[in-house]
Amino acid sequence: RADVERYKARIKALLKEKNACLVAHYYTEAIIQELAEETGGCVADSLEMARFGNARPETTLLVAGVRFMGETAKILSPEKRILMPTLEATCSLDIGCPAPEFTAFCDAHPDYEVVVYANTSAAVKARADWVVTSSIALDVVEHLADQGKKIIWAPDKHLGAYVQKQTGIEMLMWDGACIVHEEFKAKGLLDLKQVYPDAAILVHPESPASVIELADAVGSTSQLIKAAAELPNRELIVATDRGIFYKMQQAAPDKVFIEAPTGGSGATCRSCAHCPWMALNGLENMVTALEEGRDEVLVDASLIAAARRPLQRMLDFSA
Ligand code: 13P
Ligand code: SF4
Image (cartoon, rainbow, N blue to C red):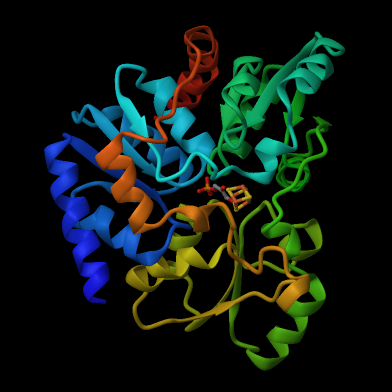
């Protein structure tokens, strides 16, 4: 704990000294979220991180999350210096949607409106008409369908299937998935529900359809935190990254949070309800990032211009 306090004090001093602001995702370690709160930064879902970073007066943003979040910050605020604790923090959805293949897929369907999830590279965003996050995906797809558009959806097939089911709109879909949410299993949830019959089930829509079907609330990280506070149930089973418990407990201090079971355990568990890339963010590499300016997010100027258009559309749409 003494070490932790030393790191925290050092990061606080460095944020001031470098005119920097800490922007953290709900899946980062509780200590990072705590620091963001204590220093006037933000802890948020991916949509709010983008909006917050863009509006901040500081010249440097330290983005604790995964790489697409840092790239989004750079695209929206190219004049700012965007640092990350480590540029190695990627995302299986980003990895599973390489820009050359995706561009070829879109080119083969020129009469389709291209909607991509925020969890993608700058190059994939640059090929899109719209960027969405899980908090506004349903609204954007409905809006496009009302205009009679045909839609390409990428890369998360589970979120895409959920959007399709909710809206009744058929989309042409990319075959990508989140390795964390894909591990949640309906059978395990049903077994757990026997132990906690009065618990409500909260599910992030990157989970498989069989898991979403059992949910009392489905939504983005911020929507799940809201649901945790609003639902009358005292016990809540949560199918998303366990990093979210820090904020959920704040939002609903009297409630009991239970991790939804994953498919594997021990050596067979690839993620076990915690994103391995989010876990790469730590106090030590935050200090290094600020001290040395290492792990700066750089995006090619031509990509910034092209990727900014669909991102700005998302922000304007959700304003
Ligand atoms: P949110 O937009 O809900 O914060 O989700 C981001 C993410 O990576 C979920 O796995
Ligand atoms: Fe990507 Fe899944 Fe990690 Fe979110 S939890 S950053 S979707 S791998």
